[in-house]
Length: 200
Image (cartoon, rainbow, N blue to C red; front, side, top):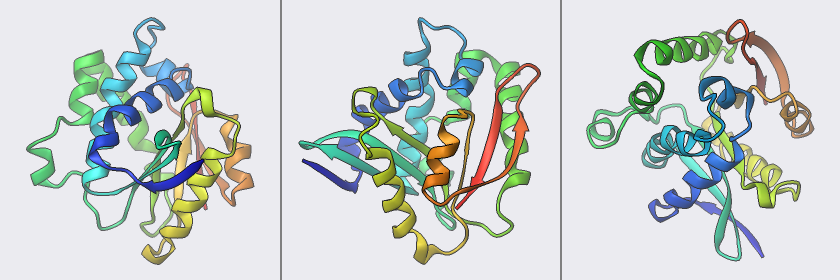
């Protein structure tokens, strides 16, 4: 039996693992973290602080199967500052963890490339889907679509256009089936992955 519900702090260890396994072969992660042997651990280390921050000031939904979370959607919501001083003082920053993993120069290159995609954002602030991850053992069962639709419907009251970015071209048809359309693309490096930004 599956159930979509808000995430809790008790879910974080499982959700960190779900994200790390789901993103292990993602083109962005392969570009940022090229070591195949350590990528799962590095993904967990890098993405974990983001999940904590979104849980504290954002929106995190999980889809649980038999009470075990197998999928997660993390949204940045306009007006909810995920970098609020109270949160920043108690949690590691994703940027700081990335610097520890790949060095300051490489981290600046990665974050600068990702930040450049902000020109493809909707003109008015809208909910941003940072993570949509399904455990590999539970993929192709409709869980990602269920989480995506649930979040979009719940965030309609916030206003603005929901949007997201993906470096995996296989994801684009999935998002199009759920009402999103491509707003533009950006090459993150030469050579490097192509980021596609979609608006809902």
